[in-house]
Length: 126
Image 1 (cartoon, rainbow, N blue to C red):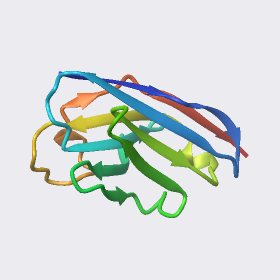
Image 2: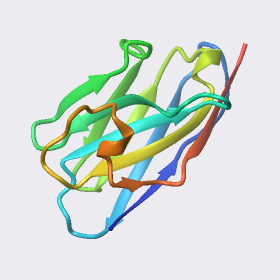
Image 3: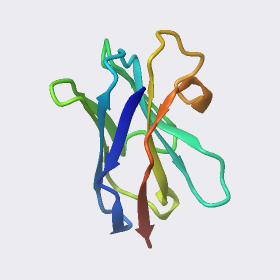
């Protein structure tokens, strides 16, 4: 089991930036995909961004393309999400997720991830 710990959440005004980090530890299982999901009150959890760690290939939800950037630091076992030009609709609990199996049906399918962090809150005010 991979332990994932998120950090970097907070409150910002619209147009501001935040950087989320996810530190992975514990199991030596390979993490094929790392992703960020978010869940706003009353909404389903949705995929925000993911990275295929072997190739560095990245994936983004249409709603965040051009504003969010996912990146990895293999030396530190961390994955980050740089969020720029934040909007009130970005307000949510953000979760880090990892998949330790090599094949995935969809990067945005939460059922494809078998390790989850506890989440960090992002609040964007208008």
